[in-house]
Image (cartoon, rainbow, N blue to C red):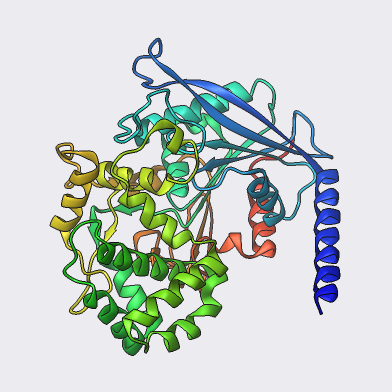
Length: 417
């Protein structure tokens, strides 16, 4: 038996090795960086290095179209290869991604990254604008800008501010409205889960309340909420929902350990890593560049500019926290909120209406964030809206055929020189 398992392991390893070898024959990936001002309003001041990855297929040249990804979540070579595959392995399109400031290795030299005040939407947009200007000196073909989720919103904002930088943009599940708190997510989760399953999960949450900030009960509550986000948004976890429904009948003392095991086996403990990140009160530079605390940066952005904290739409809820709870959490991690952080939401509605750059917008009918994006029947006047009724968040990430269709549509506006 052991010999059989050993041989199977060798075969899998060899298959994976051959796959990686074939992939490496299709393209090359190089790494570079652009030195950015920490504050673009003071270009002679302190600098930081913004990391950039470039994937060049064997059939592409310096004049080929460029697919420029505003990288927020994953900047590994593996992700670059995945992005290339998701859009049909185009032989003549260069794929470039640039890290968002404050994420990955694109961090300032400050030893204390606990309150990363240099992370602002306006500064990130200026970073991307500068990257495009620098790299166009080498890759002078037509540029297409793409972003997913928050990155999709950035793509719209970038096109509104710097329309000459690109020929077309892709916003996949990009939110158009960013209120500080919202109940839209809760409404969709209730609809997707059904009343009985939803109430059972909300009861598990309620069993851990009240919970002092960052206590074990608070962390377990946030862990379950992170699980809910994952299975609600991501198509790859949808098949697990029937199992969660059955497991939710168990007492909380049994239910949670099983959830931790499933998180470990199916998601590499992403839900728990999320909890660890948003519980961490201080952050050093070495910890910031480790890649383990990106969610803490996301929390900082929520507290200062983005918002979209989920609250209850009615009664007993999975999302039991209220406005003051979120404010308290923000202050405990990052100090006093800036004036207007709660009242001034990031809104792209006017930008979308006045956009001069063609836009491909992608949305999924099963995405809990959908109510904050463009409506399913919204007609993009200059471009195309790909609404997938059965799709989850960023449905083009799960459907190569859709990805290829979107890229072909984008290339109509960004034809090779």
